[in-house]
Image 1 (cartoon, rainbow, N blue to C red):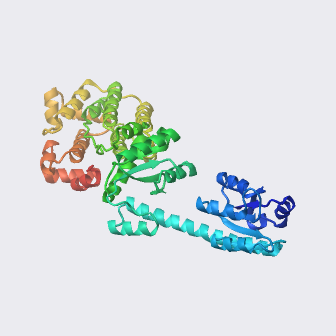
Image 2: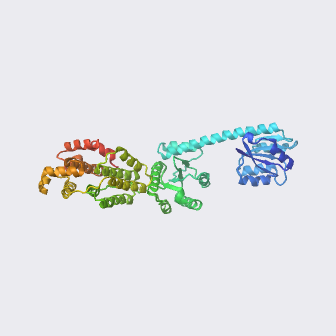
Amino acid sequence: MYKVLLIDDEYMILKGLEKLIDWNDLGLELVGAVSNGQEAYNFVQDHHIDIVVTDVNMPVMDGIEFVKKTKDEDLNFYIILLSGYQEFEYVKQGIQLGVENFIQKPIDKEILRQSLINIVVKLDEEKNKLESDKLVFSNILLKWVSGEVESTDLRRLLKLTSHPLKANGSYSILLFDDIGQDLHQFFRDENQMLFFKDLSNIVLIFEGDIGEFESFILKVKQKFDIDQIVKGVGEFFVEQDFVHESYVQAIHNSNLISFYQGHPIPRFLSEGRALNEPINYVKQDFSNFHQALSLRDEKKVFKELNALMRQLKEEKTAPDFIRYNVFILISDIYREFGIEDIEMINKSMQKIYQSDTILQVESTLYQVYHDVSQSLEEKVYSDLVKELLSIIISRFNEDLSLLNIADELHVNSMYLGQLFIKELGVSFSKYLNTFRIKKAQEFIVNTNTNFSEISEKTGYSSPGYFYKKFKKECGLSPSEYRNKYRRK
């Protein structure tokens, strides 16, 4: 509802005005009634007002003087002047000051009511235009940070919205939590008008040099809890054409802060630089983990999982890459234990995908291993099978055969093969092929090694045979797998 202030030094007229109009019916709220211009001036300093209905001739400060003073201080509202029979000079001055209407006393209810209705229509139009202008302005800023508008077009469009950019300006992206109008007004008070709301943040495109930025951050700290309100920052003091890169970086840093549940923003702000470390994709070696998993060495499994996760955390690895690595680890766990329950596997994968923090990802990984290992009777391998597994793990790149290994171990090859199937539930050749494919996947994703070399490194007799086995096991050719899973 639009807010109305009444001003008249005659008590009975003031009370009569309050009751003369059904204010609520017109979408208006009567928020004050005072007896002279000075009281009215004091009131509008502290309250938002849309319409003022004021007498002209009053003590202390008359209506015309009140209008002049508020105009000079850019206090904007619609004004209806109530004038006496011979107050034509006041009417003339009121016209010059842009007063909306003049109503002669005694006041005609319908004339006043219609005048108020006309003002409400104008206020509605202004409100709709303001909302439309805000939407246009926000859309321009969104296109700017998204890199979807040319430099010259950007300057022209912002000039049309009365927000021209400075010549040779420098810009810094900051993401804020949307705490409402207090924050918006703070930006306006600091003459930082380039802000809008994206899907989850208030995006401020700070315009200014390092001195202005430091002053701004100091005021942010004084007025707000900076640990809570600043959610991300991009590269500082970039040119207009590089604002998009700064925005992308700010989003990435915001995701890191949320994922790792840390908040390094204040340190970087105090140092006057952004969180501009490159996105890290760590090359990890899963061989020790695979060895512990194959031997059912639970203590070593957890030790290797801890080491792998610690490496990812220390490098502040991108959250999606951590999830990708954990997907691989969980897949290996299910495969090693012979779990083929698709619903169970999908549930675990979905839980990882939906994890918001590194702690949730770790918890799910450890829980999966615990649940799977406990759901099956613990397998205690015979000494012969343990030796066979050790040979596979350490010499998978050699030309291995069950017959040759049986000779090394001085046992019958048929007996060794049957024992292996009995204890692991899969044939020697299938287990060896699966192990080799897992190693090949690591080479493909983590190195630039060509596929011929990878086939040799993983023990395949020819690249063609390797290609055939890989495609059958993974559903993708080696090149397709690299294109899909390789982190640039």
